[in-house]
Image (tube, rainbow, N blue to C red; front, side, top):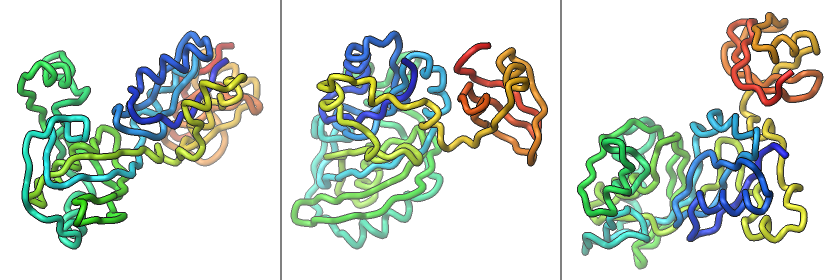
Amino acid sequence: MDGALLIDKPKGITSTKVVEKVKRKLRAKKVGHTGTLDPIATGLLILLINEATRFAQFLTNLPKTYVFTLKFGAETDTYDAEGKVVKTYEGELDCERLKEILKEFRGEIPQKPPPFSAKKVKGKRAYELARKGEKVELKPVKVTVYKLELVSCNPEEKEAELITEISSGGYVRSLAKDIGDKLGIGAYVKDLRRTKIDGISVEEAVSLEEFLSAPNPEEYIIPVESVLRFIPEVRLNSFLAGRILNGQSVLIEGEPYNGLVKIYDNGRFIGIGELQGRVLKPKRLLVKK
């Protein structure tokens, strides 16, 4: 039983706890997620089951799309609604100014990760130090905001809903704080939902509740190559596939291409390779000869 599972995570549970529940339900040897969601967040989690966990590295760096609600007028220590309010502001929410400010946060920008994050500081997770009351200073990193748009704005409630597509390593919580700082009235994430990971939509996912109550949960497992849909494919005959499975490089026909490819042996997915021109090298294989 190898493959991928698309779960729509509910609010109030960690990604790690979701993995534990799925693993127990499937009685699987290995289950892993390919990008964590905070407990406050809902939405798409891609889980890999058993041997499919070998392909996690190809999924962790994909851009992600989120719909989120910002609450203006205050800051919290976690940059979201689960944290403690550390500062309040009296200013009004100007929706037109907010819309203009968003332009400054598109493209490649420097972003400082939240102190309550999984980033490491001197060998320890930042959130471990922050929970102890220690001051955490994380260096800004470059992230790319491919999309950032205002969906709705409510000055009376001091709230706004936005949608963003952001590169791996980017934090919506940091985006919230920086937007609030720029407006001068503070902000934190009230609600957060991941709707896409690259071209994979949460609409393809099953809710955690439905999965855990299913009499045949295995029916929700899909082939791992279906979540690697963004990688082009190469189809080999049995002879060339055999050489790949033995760890050898092969010369293939067709147009030269540089990059990762999915490899098929007569229609059967066998792994990921790297094509340099027309020379194909095995990189991560699902099966052995």
